[in-house]
Length: 629
Ligand code: ADP
Ligand code: MG
Image (cartoon, rainbow, N blue to C red; front, side, top):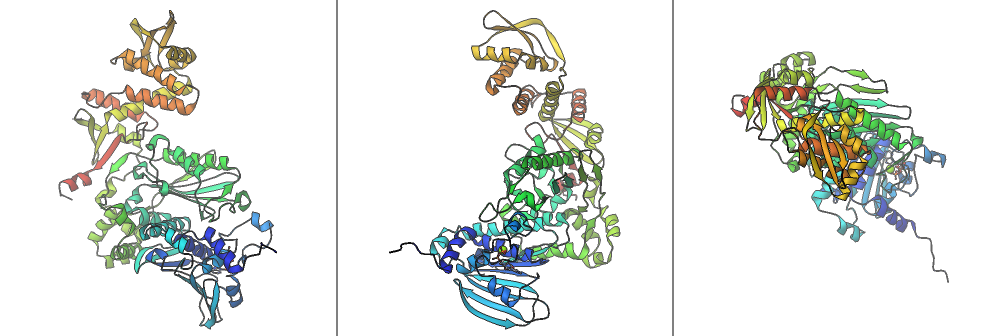
């Protein structure tokens, strides 16, 4: 007797659903991707109880004929690929033809779809069983209602996390998709409240502001870069906008939202030590690549892809990020109004607020056409300066000057002039480079023997003297090691003898030249002693023996000196340990010298650990402290 049987379609669909439909978000994702594949320009997503009770996705895409609509629920039914060759050249988000079959097997579903000039089709299916087909009035596009997810797979239902978690998954997916497809209007309604809405204008900054707050308007940089195989474009932001969760790195490959460890890493390394360890920049990047170079069929929910020439892409991304940042003034600013809201609140803007926000954005088009700089790099990386959305403060300033109704009449150019009156625009005279800013600072004094106070134009600057010197020393050492230049040394009047342990002794023997480049000149004598003849000039005031031992400890700890990363760690240690400390009284000349030296560094914004060195406080900000503004 046979024990093996081919399973029925309903069962096999349920099994497929186990892979495709992990949670409500998976359904939203599949349906939205179907809408996008159908060329929809407006996609409305409506959920109830985090999608568990109901998910509606309504699009204005191509729609389906009755025959297609019936077929679409069959497993392996797709309009997207037909031959095996197509599998290696996928230009659509879907291609497996299993999503609708899978979703309909674990829920109650109704599909209403139609094309121009003919009756539309309404289909109802429950647990994979067709219950009703009928014709309705003409409608363009497709509306799918999915209810009671997992009602017939209780184990799955049990596995769902809290409504809040499931909701967040959907929310985050829609945000990422909105960033990947700024040409499409997305509307997201949860439990009767409008959560967000995008405009499909192609302006990514609008979407960014909606997701991460208006403040971002002053802190983002648009860029694009391409080589023979890849074209990368998007937005990166000022390190000041950093977050502790890497979800803020939004990546899309051919407009497919995916995660990719290598590209994330490339972005982060492009920021170098502008960011502390474990912090992430807000980024939205889309990679365009020939569909033949990307395998999208490697993950059950298509959350990951496999790329050919991955390393090449990572290099391109890293370089693009680096070169975009290098052209910007990245001095930290305390200028716009901090929004005193918890992140959870941020995620669920009240309907009222959301509507207000949209009113402003939609009706008045508060939009400043900023200088659009295109720098052509020899390596083919284009860096473009973005236009700028007005900050909330600026919008308010404008609104104060003119009632909304009046604002609507004014064309954009006029608004630019008016908004120039807004105080927080003054701080954004921004064309001056950071170097100029630093060189124009006049020192006011020192606070708590730790921070230098300085001013320029209408801003007050606070400078962390320790962080500043760390940066200066770090770059000196970097230069010394990289370019084989030597940092200034000072011969010791009385050479210092130090007794070393075996391990330390070996390290000294192995890295004698490296030490010399770093200004430490020593010779071995006796069995286990070294004689230090000269040290870097800048450590004169410090305990030389402690310094030498630390340096040697580093060598022992990291072993090899030739690895760039290790070397960098080493240098960070050196520059940190032996910089001016907080609580060092500095006189005015010393402070001025420090600021000047800082202005000579490549990256005067953060110390090697990624902490800010200089923070600008606008006069407007100070006035707000005193309730004058
Ligand atoms: P796939 O997307 O992998 O082709 P699906 O099961 O998601 O598989 O969908 C099956 C087919 O149904 C699609 O190939 C498409 O032709 C059609 N379809 C699904 N959703 C829509 C929609 N919103 N608009 C137009 N056609 C759709
Ligand atoms: Mg699909």
